[in-house]
Length: 273
Ligand code: ATR
Image (tube, rainbow, N blue to C red; front, side, top):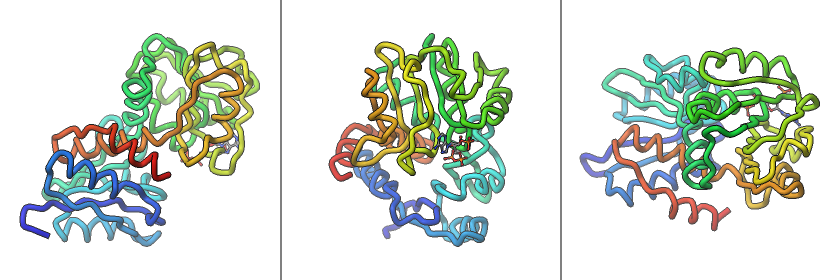
């Protein structure tokens, strides 16, 4: 490694599957930034000590993935507003001895929907399915788009209600279970973990308004069961690969002050899925 080359990486367990090193290497080539980006496997009980060792070695920052996003939140000495709102951190910046925590997941989702898919959220009816960590991470950036209403639907309705209450001062937000969903929506986002086990959340088909975009935060070589269901009911569909690339671009921007173009990186990843 030459002098002046800054080190970054993604901390996870497991982490071998992570596409982040390929994405950040492509961003670095494109923007001519001198940096390396590694996969960093941390022991399940050794997240904080791993971070401390990275700082010791001169790392400038790291992404954080499963299962450490809550620990990263707890470890950070300073938090961005969106990390605070998300209750989780996916991006760490090491600033001297300080550990700054941010969360770029929600911004990644919004950029992928608004800029890449070309679907505005302002004044629209948005349905967010799920009330776990993935859902919580995207609520504030969605509300920042000023939708007509954001409805959170969850199998366990009490968790959706808690989440909506947490953000009640930030915009028009409501919560319910799937069965009581009566309205239709312009954008329906699947933030449940159901797609991981090829399950379909019990969403009534009436939830898809005409011209609806159905977005699954999961991605893979084939459409998820939710995307298949949405397509059968007339919705356009998109998976979470663009969100992955956009959250990385936002982290890269935070670290380097340069915003990489994402389209070719996305196309390349898609062709290799
Ligand atoms: P994550 O960090 O991925 O959000 P999580 O915090 O465990 O994971 O949350 C998982 C979410 O997916 C929850 O909202 C869960 O619903 P419950 O709160 O009712 O458990 C939701 N979920 C998981 N499997 C589901 C399924 N088969 N159908 C509908 N919702 C499901």
